[in-house]
Image (cartoon, rainbow, N blue to C red; front, side, top):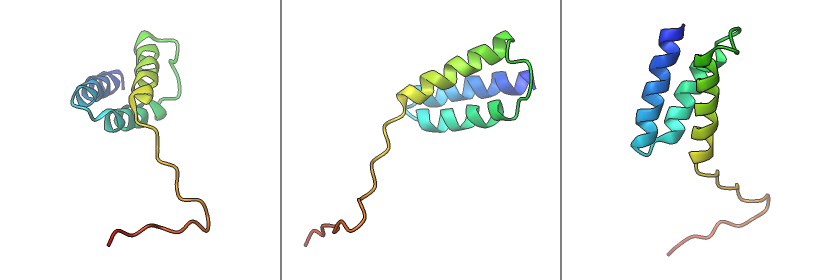
Length: 75
């Protein structure tokens, strides 16, 4: 599992460097979520820190239209 985590960390860094931080975050989060022990290890501490950094790079989600709001159409 450590090799898979390291590979996911490397790939997520590469994706972030290409401007695809949300994809990198999703990839690393998926691998990290499957782990059930060893959270004190250096690899998992680095992965958690990287997830935090990638999460901060993600653009904030757009708020959905409130209920009853009319959508504007461009003619």
